Length: 101
Length: 482
Image (tube, helix red, strand yellow):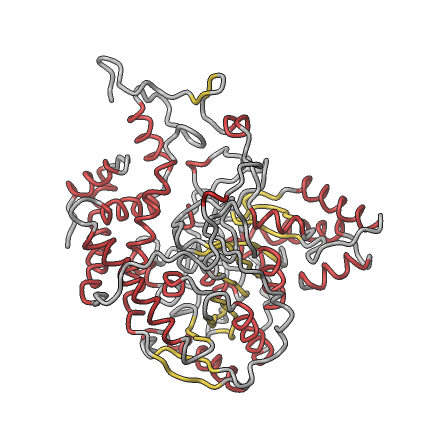
């Protein structure tokens, strides 16, 4: 299966990525080759098996996780590109009128 | 000296942790400008920690099994207060707010973390060339790739900058660089080592493990870092064995399986000869070789690249400029900030894999790609389980060849992925794998033997690796010179 530039651009947008024109062309070619390779999976029968998401032996239930020792809010905010009081600061969710999205 | 010998000397007072760490700094200063393994050397914190270890010994306290051992950490393992970039621009300036469980255990064993080492960006790569931060070279030949993604860990150990490093392995990222650099690398059973504090790539596959110059050191380190941890819900509560206890017991009578579908035609001539030498060594040590079939092994690379990249596309959604790392300047909307920060921050390979994973999970393609790959991985797990009813261990070459040249595959991602042909199957089925050196190829570059065991049978795999080490007598002593 080949991926054209339009398809690569559409998937990249889903992943919140914007590629340069050069990247789009290069990725379309490389990803087509990779998807062709992955398509060989059609030749393998796994009908007898179900998707196996067995947890490792003795895995701990999430509810058992103790809460103590979690990182402090201050440590978290120290890494934020921008913060105000106890909150992360980000651009407004909707673009300003006339502003580029 | 090995890590085991260094720790014994520090515990007994024969040498100090401070001088041990100082010697590591001197070696790093001498060879790392050529090798490029270290991203950052934590000189003062490491010297202070070493002094603390010495003070505790002087005050009569018993020291841990890794007392004073200088240890390098892959750049995706958290140590509180220290920078961690995952080899990426997008995590520029990020400081870990807490310490990874495996690193906590190293500290509890009195090891001394002395710096962070290079890796392919977000552990995506097999050559360390996808790092946005520096170039790492193979200490055996500086024109060659050290392997990846834990290439910095393997190169630092091979160049004798440190006796021990931690890496992480999702589809071969400990075992392949260990093979390329002539050192021992262990990917434990999924769930044997806590992933708490490891930056996630593909959460159902990622495992932390040791890289060392000897099998005994790898076993000692694994005994230290393994074990239950309530902060990782996939971490097993099964008690940890002392992997050194039985390591010298030999492999007389052990049934070791070769895999029918691993064709020598897939190997280059040197790798085929090296693998035969390793099989001969196993037989000389008393193992009985048996051939078994695992037909789905041929689907492993394709299955792996669907599942791992699907998980990566979800895991890496968190890097968007909001909470940490790089934020694009001037974005006037939240969506624009996400897109620009990610597009500027991620390198090509990471973008390629996120797109591939997003494609495999997208509407209309999910069942054909992710669903099918998940079913094949389940069926592969059953085939491995059936094989382990017949044999105690399985062996393959770690890689189809010795180290390839830097730059040789960087523009051919599929060729790069295919170098993982033998390391991805054990990752998909969650079993432990040890890569042990088994000689040099005709270019003087190391080759690795991959030893696979049933879940939680690391002790058996390490015992076999030790037998191969003793029989072959491999010595890791490259002298990296420009």
